[in-house]
Image 1 (cartoon, rainbow, N blue to C red):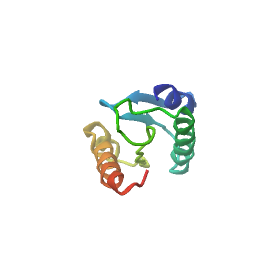
Image 2 (image 1 turned 120 degrees about the horizontal axis):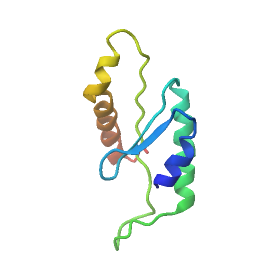
Image 3 (image 1 turned 120 degrees about the vertical axis):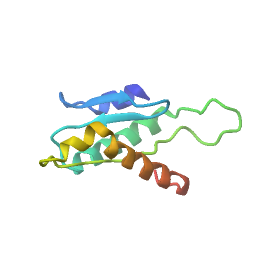
Length: 104
């Protein structure tokens, strides 16, 4: 999984990292909201091609992704919000809220 993420965050300034137990983050500076959407599609395709199993007996289909995107245009005062983690928490809440409905 980490290899697929690293291969698809390939601009020199992009940074991919594990952000918790099963969570990963990709920071993509100087991009609009369409850039991450393209990366998401490449990630989904890459993970689908891996056909990773969950490893536990009786657990459904292969591993899938739940993805959230947070973008922000820097303006005066907005950058101070990022160190607090608020944009990431908003993104994660939205992702986990959609996940049970099968929106991945």
